[in-house]
Length: 331
Image (cartoon, helix red, strand yellow):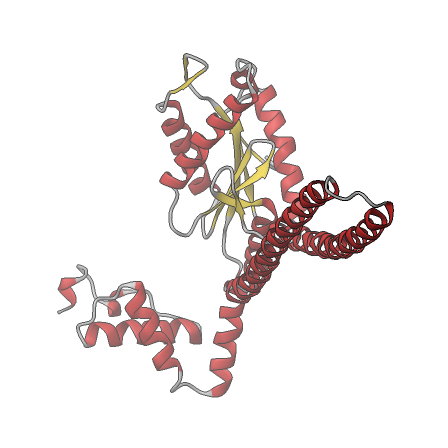
């Protein structure tokens, strides 16, 4: 039965040493024993089902580990949904009040037109004076209603603007390039550093950007955006599911390579460079061969995300100056 999935058995693997490794092997043994394909969804299901039968202290340790890996995306999504619904409510109220304003202004316009028509038939000064007072009272009432609606529209608009700013500040994606934004990436990077501190595994950070020599050839700002979009698409296409891609700003893209050492990161950046070099882009009527410069950082627990970003930016300048494909920061 085990031959359906591999040429070796679970028992052939290195003997696990920690309780979590032993439990993980037990889960995999159970899947193989029951003939269940050991794909991630099945493994996850069996993992949590079997975890319920483990001692409380062990379950606590496992869930603490999971909490380090997991983000609060669900809570964030729920909060975002609440804010979007509130923003929709404000927008709907603004539209309703705008419609009422239109109705009031139409009423006022008709009132003035009728008044002009009626006054043409009034001969007595007293009758005209009485009629004007009546018209003035109606205009004052309509004007008061309009002022009230305008004030409420202004307040709703201000609330909606502040809400939209808050929603925008908590987004996770860069809307131009379709990758994570720097704020969310910073959070993911700091979380990975915490895991490295706890488990001492190897992870790497690489950054790349289009060479300044290429960028100088463009006359239009939108040309730079088009090229960077091509870079983002290639990064998404070549990345593994575990890799995290983000735009740090100023055309600098970052990839968090989890459980990947410097050698693996070097292979990754070389593969990306080859793909980008072989992907010519037509800009401003010319076919441009894109060249990039990059950096590689070995992630260590003692540094903060902002410090990594600064080191990478400095290393990118150095790579550009020395005409190198990439610089391994710290070497």
